[in-house]
Length: 312
Image 1: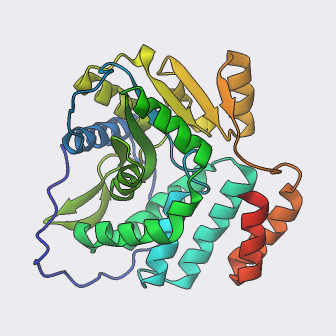
Image 2: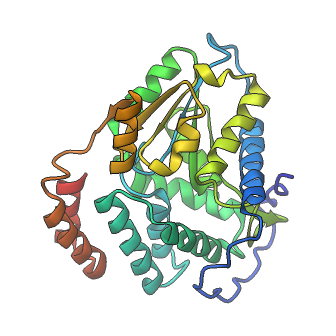
């Protein structure tokens, strides 16, 4: 069941509730079912938002992960920083998120505990806010913090699929609202993302199912393929993470972009395409880690510039 539609712009915004505990919620008893719900919800929203135009190729499509595949770093972190500037949450909260961002960008591996923490944080900072508000601020934050972090090489790959008349979707654990903004700004077909529950246009602090992560991505893509009549054997998928193997193995043409070590090894063993748009990453890793931590904690412009030069 898809979440209720957004409230009207003129609706009175409710007062912000007290900020929830930072403790991650307990794991659900039926994670597989929650992943199924997350995938179904994401696919249903993508179907509604994607107009079926006359295209040259109706049965093949391409699916792109976002974090470190389309965009440098984690989109949820860039969104969080933008919301922090708008006083959605505290400096202590953003510093915790910054550490996870440093880990993700330098080590290149998603930590399951970090994923769970990201889920709890995302729910806490949007609970009580309106869908309209998040969508409006998301447009601003994309321009401020995300547009210049798009990997040109990945963007070119997406354009090749579009030029072939294929649909191109983003598939990400990021909130569907920001995922849709990224897709629209890049001229893509649409996005599959994590669906947060909202009632009368106000976020409740709960998810529809789970985060769109791991196996939930594969569920969402399979649902979308069924709805649009896609032949998955003729489809392509792109990701940087070994956690996305369920998605990558679902299609006939998987490709590893800026892969973590496990995915790189797996891709080479399977004869998959590998594309790496990072520069001097391994050589600079030790120095980058030190500079990145200093930048995250101190927030100085010098450390931030060093991180961008050496990692991005």
